[in-house]
Length: 339
Image 1 (spheres, one colour):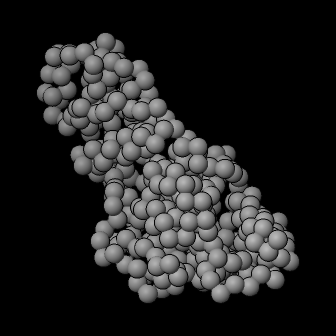
Image 2 (tube, one colour):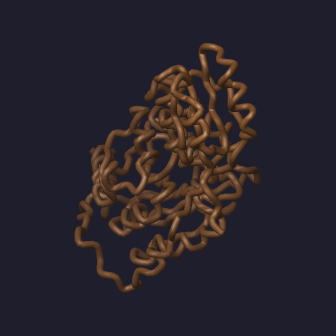
């Protein structure tokens, strides 16, 4: 039996706070069943909703309202901070605090990722209709070090977009890929098969001692945080990921940008929530770049939209555009290095 998605009701006498809370609740994947000011919450409206949690955020005291929601037998969240302006560094941290409070009361939203269409696609499916031409400079470039590390960040709807992106990636790029995908741990092994069944890129769930290698994909494990040494060796922290998401996109971005600075790239694909938006500015300050899937091709645009709101995203496009951008970015940097 499928678990019902938690339902959230918001009451606030501040219009901007109601908008911010609604954005946070829906963006994280919860069902928003009510968002109103206290004067509109008459008895008929109150009885018409059956939330799993109330969010009550008031500037002025309203004892009657508080008595009604407290007597409803449903958990009530009080005392949420005022939402900062969207696009500031404080906003994703505020949104994360809202999510953690909701998670503590009603648990994760029910988000069903379906890999069956990807698993059902025939192995001998035709190649992508568009091909990316690899400049000769990339083929001729030889280096003993790990060149570029590209984090692919995804959540709801992400696997299909990531697979399409990988299908366009030509062999021989000096790029190692790390996937941070919000998914049930029991589905990760399926990911290692479906993402590469038409491109045949080596792919596995990362474990301690593995090495980042050009043209290969490591999937960040759900259960345990990983980091990387300067030469690209996977380090297992033997602790759970920090925060409410597993794996934590924020932590993966922080670890990669700290180790690989100007050689780090992040691409934010379809997904719920705003995971990654806290560490995005850190990657930019370290010299890396962040791109995102465009809204019209996302199954769920909340995650890339949240990163765009930080001002860190320098390019948006569909999976082909993003793959082509990566090839051109590498070619440009190689030309600059040999000039």
